[in-house]
Length: 70
Image 1 (cartoon, rainbow, N blue to C red):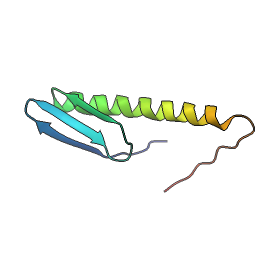
Image 2 (image 1 turned 180 degrees about the vertical axis):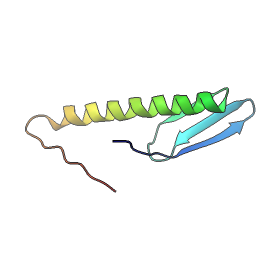
Image 3 (image 1 turned 180 degrees about the horizontal axis):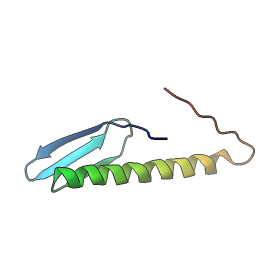
Image 4 (image 1 turned 120 degrees about the vertical axis):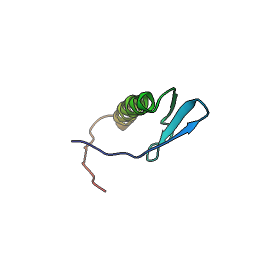
């Protein structure tokens, strides 16, 4: 399953900076646009994995997982 997210990117002086609109805290800065997009992708994957691990840990025992589409 592939999810789509929106990256907001811009050049600021010599740097490219960007954010993922849908996930607070996922932001990066790189020297090139291509490096920025790769960093945003990696950072987003890591954030999702960490959030998932935290949610499962906090759920404790005897829980259900449900797929929700929006």
